[in-house]
Image (cartoon, rainbow, N blue to C red; front, side, top):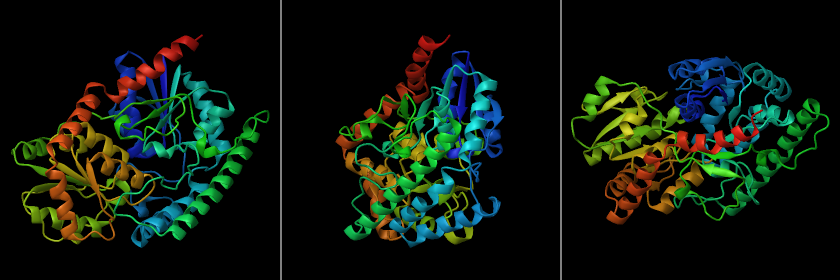
Length: 436
């Protein structure tokens, strides 16, 4: 039997998907991953078969740089980076306007390409990244059942009166003006209408007999797999048929130098702004100054940040372009992050409290959820001072005992029931019932 995994050509999305797929390999099933060429090495490192399928204009093998993107996409990426410097509402507005080309790139061609991959691979089960809209459109148009993996906060799939791209909650450090918020919501609503029109036009071409959908952003597979701890989700949101798989924590190859650094038995803070937002070396420099002031050592994943922008750093710190995040979070006393899905879910798996500096998308509502649970402190990245960052670090390093106990309880549950096993249990029995 075969599992087909469909992912955009972005490491941050592919890694949890292929980690989920390891449960199928352990069950003796074949795993085929359809993604672009930039992340083919990740697929091969997991020992899975790779089918080339590019779902968008850009790609990200682990650290993204504008100069390495195709013409046009490079300027779009620079525009996004500039927007993060202007502020949260400017960033969310930029992302909203870009969605009509980012999320629905050549949908008819990609839809047919996905259908061809399914015909060639003949999978019994299919899991798809929720943000692979053109791929999901192709599957839906052909009536092909698939599971939909939301790699992000659950609000990435809107429900009720939520609008895609408009955060339903904000951390305490953010207080946008009501008029500016109203403008952002109105923009997101206009984009949703236009995006749905694009979806329906492509759907009509792929499957003329199909009925149009009311909102493309609320379309989903069956079931929906939320790569997120249920304990951090809003229990009052009415969700589609779903499973919270908790976290998909990957195995990493051993790095002797990192292992030796960890084994010095001194507490440390792990810092990463992910593959995109690491470009904000100005924010990273303030974070490094704050950590240095606390006297605790640090492991800094530079990503695309300019090392020279950080100034002199203590020699006993671990500083590299790329670091094995899982290995370091496993023993970290705290972490500083932009609030990406991998950072949050992996930190929770190892009971690591977070200082979150959200820049974009669902990072704001995710930071608000961590703050509400007491497992993190959120600050505005453009405004937080060194002193404020140091105070936030001290706060998460000294969690009250009851909060620490709740975090440890959450972490034990995530480790005892890995996301790959939860996903397999949710999907495999259903596919056996419908298999020919």
